[in-house]
Image (cartoon, rainbow, N blue to C red; front, top):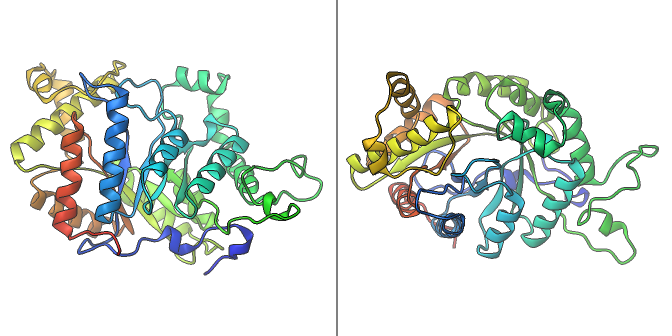
Length: 372
């Protein structure tokens, strides 16, 4: 179903992936802008630019940045700012949020930010939205200037509807926001002498449970599921999304992307070392001790308690890692089990060079290359 481009909506082609070498579906990148021990946020952001350039050069479909707060090892608190930086260093790859946490922000602010990004990189911007805070409760309260955190999550469908109205500039007559416009945006096309881009950022819903899966299906929107930290819910959520799907002006069939932790190295032992360091980082986060991503040496020397060992084993069972042949086999199997339309890979490791090498190896394994 093709939408009306003049209305400023996105096309299905902007959402769906195209060429993907021998991979079963398009491959994309999710960047947490991780900061390793001994490194700075500046180092992490430079690595993000390097990975984005590599992803564009090698034919990955899109590059998303996640919103997190109050985590020393994650420098992605401001996705819109990072995406603007990445837009200045790339030319073709789709860029987006995976995601912006809608309850943390006023819908008008998000519409303005992503309208600005769309003006910077026309036809390349995705707006992925989540309903979780992307942090702990106290930080969420500080972000929202309120301690009524459940209210934000419960109001998510209403916030989403308001945001889409701002993006399309189509509040009905009599609405209190009818004369308020997100700029850059469609209102510029209706102003005297105005010429406006036919594009507006496609809206995606993100989730790690069934709520956003059902809502995305009901609204006919593309859906991204956080398999990388909620693997047990992946297939039920995708089933719910597909069962709930109703064709819309955006999509005539469901389109589901899943986030996947995947790390390929030249040596299997090195993959295990890097994954152990990332798991220790998660142990500390889950026990209220967030910090920088530890080195593999620190992780090898760490005395894991029995409970922590169980967590590490469970966590790493959902991280596809090893040699590139092992990672390719794991990705192929995951696609067969889930039927996902796109795999978005996140490589969690202490060093940026390890993450870069992982994406290069995976691109080589699948023969990925950017369109001429």
